[in-house]
Amino acid sequence: MADILLVGASRGLGLAMASEFVKRGWNVTGTVRSGDRTELHELADKHPDRIEIESLDITVPDQITALRKRLAGRSFDVLFVNAGIADANPNEPAGRVSTDAFIRVMVTNALSPMHVIEGLQGLVTADGLIGVMSSGQGSLGNNIRGGNNVYRAARRP
Ligand SMILES: NC(=O)c1ccc[n+]([C@@H]2O[C@H](COP(=O)([O-])OP(=O)(O)OC[C@H]3O[C@@H](n4cnc5c(N)ncnc54)[C@H](OP(=O)(O)O)[C@@H]3O)[C@@H](O)[C@H]2O)c1
Image 1 (tube, rainbow, N blue to C red):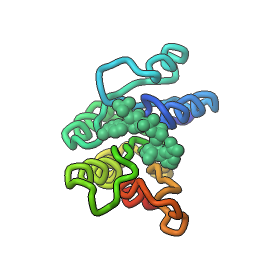
Image 2 (image 1 turned 120 degrees about the horizontal axis):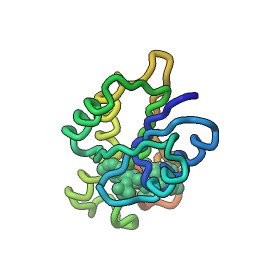
Image 3 (image 1 turned 120 degrees about the vertical axis):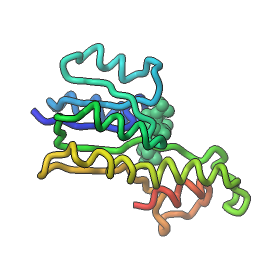
């Protein structure tokens, strides 16, 4: 039996990964951002012995530190950072993106995953794996349609 710490598992691809890992016999500790009930909670209700739910906003360093303390003594075979956001206005030309919008996507998608790895890598076994979600949209060569400018820059593979 193997254990994964899956960051950003409330919905979307993170939720799908949680479901798939459980199907394959793994124990999943998945994080959600708020105290609200999420689709991960629905999945955990079906697999109470296999899914644990923790809370983490990856853009808040104190929350990373707190999660590390809560998980002290645990070890994971995989730490995977799935959490990420898209550009609010995907068709906005790069030169018109506001500083706030730029910072929001860059901090969430580029800087915060590095903070998570720095803060939580000690929970991963010596022969374990650490991964961060990327995107084909980060490819320079494949960018033939434009748009999603900050997202593309923050999701370079
Ligand atoms: N969809 C695609 O086609 C695609 C393709 C390639 C790569 N990706 C990447 O795959 C990842 C998931 O994409 P998705 O389509 O499944 O997105 P999604 O449905 O919007 O889900 C995003 C997930 O990230 C979490 N999240 C966002 N900001 C966070 C923060 N500050 N702290 C903690 N969690 C946060 C969300 O939590 P909340 O529920 O709290 O918002 C949610 O669980 C993203 O990193 C995205 O860049 C997506």
